[in-house]
Length: 216
Image 1 (cartoon, helix red, strand yellow):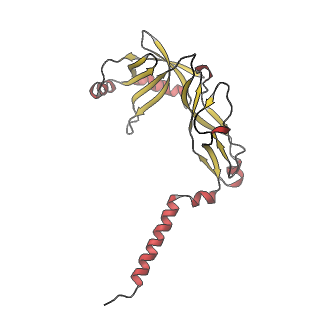
Image 2 (tube, one colour; image 1 turned 30 degrees about the vertical axis):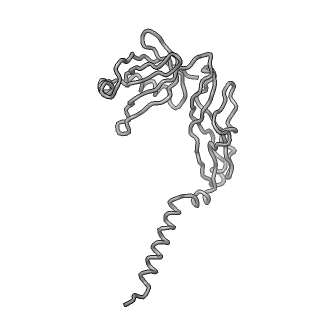
Image 3 (cartoon, rainbow, N blue to C red; image 1 turned 90 degrees about the horizontal axis):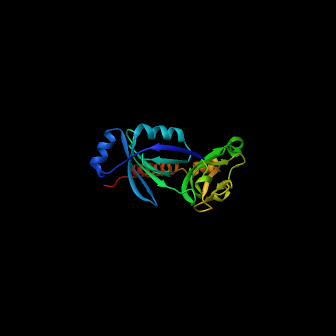
């Protein structure tokens, strides 16, 4: 489990205008939600980007400190500008060391599927994150899934994920995380292929109509 510290500043102004000015000054509007209430904050953009580089593709606990007090959190959500990729807003969720928390963890695939390697199958990675419940001390950085024995026609579901001490998986146990499909089946199910077939049929019908004898 990774744990980091992040310096923030209290934020009193809300609304679009103040938040635009805050971003223009090199900071990001943020909010901490939790049992102690809702706390508007601001985070320096450079500090948060450095934090995200350190976190990488893993889950992490973040101790948010405003200079007077600190609170343990997880990053619940972050919004980015689709054009500039700059962070626009961050939501932190307060957690307690002594109470179970809920969050989502990234799923990392390990190994090479035998269905892909030896049978020409296609890997279908459907669930890139999974919900979990655990104490903060038991929070893993990610869920590692070994797909070495995954053959064509086989799937790994939430119920098949590795058992981790103190961690409960959330969601439908039958939900597919990753599967290995037959290449023929994958092609047949491709909407583009169905669209091409329909288009060809339409052109054929148009051609038949044009060849029909004209009346009058």
